[in-house]
Length: 303
Image (cartoon, rainbow, N blue to C red):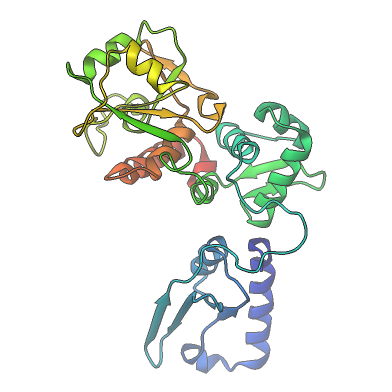
């Protein structure tokens, strides 16, 4: 079952209920979808409609008013029965990540080839990634295949099923003996490629007068060569107590649409949000705050 099938299924369920079930018994029955596999995105769409589900991997949600029943059990988050055809099923690769970032960073009408050019990938890669996102009901497209709308909040949550700031990239803890402020001052004159992310980016993008949910404690920056940057910035390899995190990226996409503010370079808000949502500690709370901020100026981030 694909996410794009959910709305058709809802219409069929409503028709069958009107045809076969007396209205006075409404509280004695519930809607439930049984399939070989119910993906996280399908579960999200079904939950919004108050519909339960069951699949043989152990995913089960059943809610009934009379008698009072509520069961919510978690099974697999990946399909153990993939289709045999060669379709893209993951956003883990560099090409898919570039398409995702181009969609999250952009606005308005986007054709397949235009999107491929923005993401710096082939038209074939763009087409395959958009096919996956269409099946997951994360983009809306016109008859020509061009993207007319993006569900950005849902899209970033789908992306972080396959992307994580410390799992997709190579993270190296470091220690600045003289504190992190010295490192940030040094970066304003640094000629090497870098981009601050995580909490530092959130603080940079927050409007004046709005406080972050947590103070900045661990500046995190993407760099091409962590050992070289560690040497250039005078950082040490700590046995414990790191106060800087250097991250070598899985792809140059993390630098796309970076922003220079007060002499420091930051990743795009979308990249910062993905990194925060997959970070440790209270980072997901910071990510949620950044998503709310983005939704204030771009309605596509509201859903």
